[in-house]
Image 1 (tube, rainbow, N blue to C red):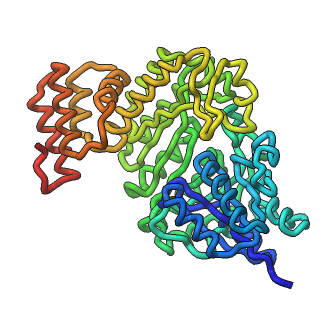
Image 2: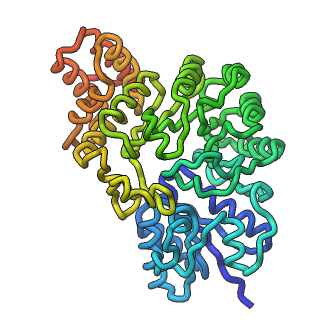
Image 3: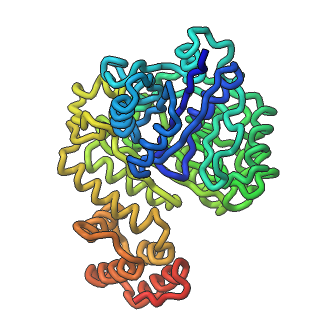
Length: 460
């Protein structure tokens, strides 16, 4: 009897990412004696190269790991692959298809839609047998590190202690943690293999009772690998700070989703932040100078109008994190936000990524303005091109952070991608046109910043 060829496919948002889900499922199937292989691509790869490469592997069964960023491409691939090989069986898993309320009925091109944690659910679908193991007692996902230049995704826990109404993690099971020695062993392998960055996908890493011990381990043994953690700032202790101060610069990155500073908004989405304590701890982290800090805000949440959002933006930016992401609400399948969207007057696209169009508190024109400010923020602050120039701008001029980035975003409208010299010149011209203080000194700061990225080029 011929063994069915099973192919697990990950379509990543970027070439530099890895598909943890398919690797973990593959490792479990292999341990259980179910032969399979893994193929990874990027959604930015040419469509035909993905399509023909999958066909060349001649699979009998394909499992796609579905997310917001890849579901449209997966659906197109599925239709075309079945036209080419009519006997092919295709199943979908992952958060996008697996949590859709209509399930298989919404995806007629798939033979099955699998929900729940992938390792056991896929094993059950393929064999008809019940899995004998689940997280954290699963085999290590990476038999071979896909590419040391890529971001390697890793989990030390599953589940989330919080129930944020917009997040798919609110639907997961209770928190479960890997044993500390297992985490150390697996991280040691990634470090020995020369992984450039390991990104923990734990939804709130520092609820882990072993968080301190894991940080201590990577500070002492991390080599050249960088580690990224999503954290809740209120949970840090003085002991944590004393340890983190000893981390080599670049070893640790933190990301904190503040999402909003509006108390009514936070209550409505079941997110209970202590803003004062969070700000105090974030300032402590930034003062260390050795940890990269990334903060997030979400526009389009219930009860947050433009004025409230701008106030929150200005207060968060005033912390001067290394990156501030201005994101927009996405109404995800299966979440409480999806259930309550109509009651909140939230209009959102029916197509992935289901982004907000307007709410009872934000008009479409407000959203457009916020998008413009986001473009200005990303280009002039988050990309890190202008550290000296921005510091000078804020120190010498009393300006709203939000309205500054809105103005800079408007400067970019209807322009093609700009070269470095053009972008720097544009920033200088903008500064002069607004009659801001000491333009000659600002120009010197721009020249200093320009030489960092372009040491052998004249700025103008």
